[in-house]
Image 1: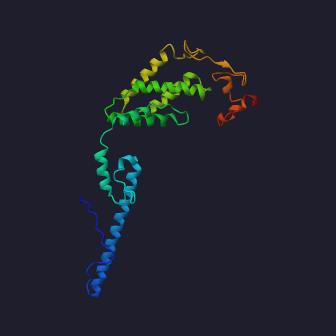
Image 2: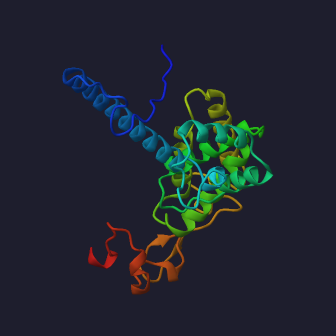
Image 3: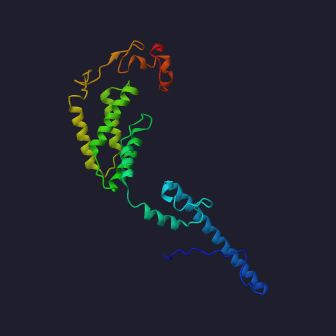
Length: 250
């Protein structure tokens, strides 16, 4: 494949036009084609510059940016060469930030699959920086997040069903090539369920550390939520799910 050579600016009119009208007309036509080629080249360079700027943080290109011209005085090749020279490795602050992002709790709004996929992205970046994967730690954070969500937003889900749901989403986010990691996660999940603090099916109190259901004075149901968190209260009207129906209307 032939190497692309950037065209030069052909200027507005051909140099040294011929005195013969027929030859001069041919020169003008050829010159118009060169102008079109050059303008196409400039358009492609502008698009490439814009995409490079959008793809990276401003700090990586700050040295190349001009106060008056932005990046228009730099070619895409120059920008890529600069990125290769300054973006080779992650420093301590980058690694610390990735760990912090990996340990952020699930907000209950983002889908579990998207939450774990984002964590996989941070994990791959850490792996490139020499940090080994830690499935036990990720499982611990997943379980901790689950506990927080079940207390606040999943009162209608049985504890064990919600736990299985969250971990199933996590398992689905694991790449098919990571079969070994998938098996390790399932073994850890099984051990967590078998521990004395995990709730057992049929045991309402959830073992020694489970949370028992209590009858709510507002809705009259056996639930996990606190009385002041009941959706029957008008104070919690803004927190009701879209498909929520009052038990008093049935």
